[in-house]
Length: 538
Image (cartoon, rainbow, N blue to C red; front, side, top):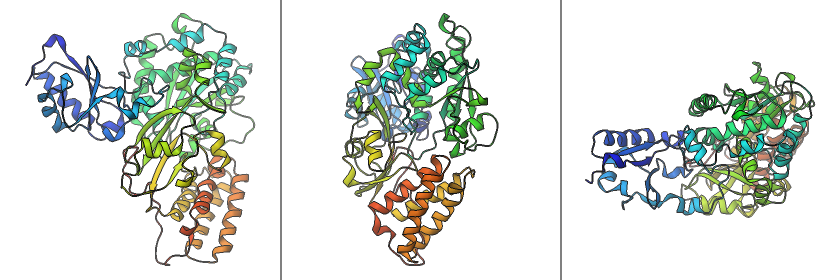
């Protein structure tokens, strides 16, 4: 074994991202730290976020003069052999991947929101500043609030939570309200299937979200902010709480932020597991300590939001992108993307996919490029049959539509949505009647129950699909299902009931044979990702 002198410790990065931890990253880090404690090797272990190549986790990176060299996936039992082989010098080994920044998966991406994720120690203020942190906030504080709103508007930044509403227009509405008390709320209730980008941002670059919310506070005149995080994200909750405390200690939150006149503070609130609280007004109800039910609109939250006060509500990716817009200018961000879909989107590849993870690139990339080039096809090795884009309420798209560009208007034109950028892949063993049934069943389970079309329509939808599959008056029940979808789309109070027909209709349109009668005793079981493993790693 080659010893390393104590005054020349080698920095080794092991992700603290919960996806990496779920496959043994903590044990790998422990093994490296034990090797350092033994005196045999001088190692400085840094727990970074994940680079997003989830099939390679735990991904260990070693700082070398030629760049950070990656090894993965590394098991705890591999550590001794890697060290003996000269991993600290970037030596060859069967698990050696090469310089991480040069790997094709990363090299062809355009990382804007995720530029620091996986690169830095998430809770190191020095790392954050060294990699461009606070440049956007300082630029914003030098401008009048209206000028900041104009910059965000001109960048073309749209809400990344699903609806794609222009962020600047929402901010302008809040700015123009004369109320003394205003709020900024971050919707981190990331409940859509196949989505995990919000979690990775909060765990991998929490100061970026804090900076984005602080810029929003300055832009609209808010003094208080809340981050509403789903209870299923304990690591994100812990990281954000630690980051907020550190930010307060350094004057990045609190009174007279960075020596300016801005007073703004942040608080974490943890949801109780209701999918419906991802809808902005339900989230506000929950933040107020009430049951999460949808509010009728108008009034919109920008005018009467949290506790009846003007409120900016954006999701994690939207707010985390704001610092880059202010740091580099609206024009630089607006130059990325296509048509009305400007900038980048963080696409999340999950389900039955060989190479699942995070792909951030400009809008306009095709579905085929994402699934086949980045994703490498299915994990099962069987042909891809369909993908669902935009969560459990998104459309199922057949392979014949894979050349569709990823942009809001192009997807809307074919009855689909980009949503939060989640892409769940299914192979040819998937039963699309089961998937259509699952959409209705999911709505019945997660509906807040406030409006009849959603509450009752979803239950009737399950019953009608069961009758169709059982061969009971198939044509009549298909017509009834179409009428039911119309009613839910047009009559529901929010997108929960309004979008549930989207996956149902797409399944019937593109895969009609799956709705033919089958043996009466044969049950249909939904497979949210046929042949899949877990989040992004299948």
